[in-house]
Length: 194
Image (spheres, rainbow, N blue to C red):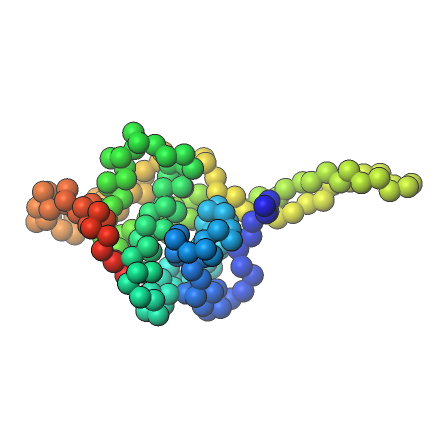
């Protein structure tokens, strides 16, 4: 198991190409999904967003060469990333209202929420590791590693979601509330959003 996570070290175009071809990032039913942890995937996405990458374009490039069977998992994976940053690893059945609020977002709004959560929750840190190797006539020391973590500092913080919802209501004041409430049912139909 990797202890130190880092985003890819490449330019934005190459980064986008890596994401656009990676089932490891976008398909949670593939065997490639198990190659890295959820936090490592989130760090990789955060690196792309922090470099100015466009998640929507990367996902669209990934989706255009996939059949519907694979594309229908993308929005669930995006939801899973957001859920990890907003709620944490553990599943909280008491947070169903938050899950429904996320599922009511339009795709552009969902990707905006993901990007904003990535900017807020992924932090660069320095890890100090004690070297406990005995070397004659030397003193043990520390090694430093740059690492990226998914911070739990903003757990249960729905501020960004609130802002996106308010902007939606201002942009669509005539949207019927019952239509809004039923939007989360799109996810139950297993339809493909991308």
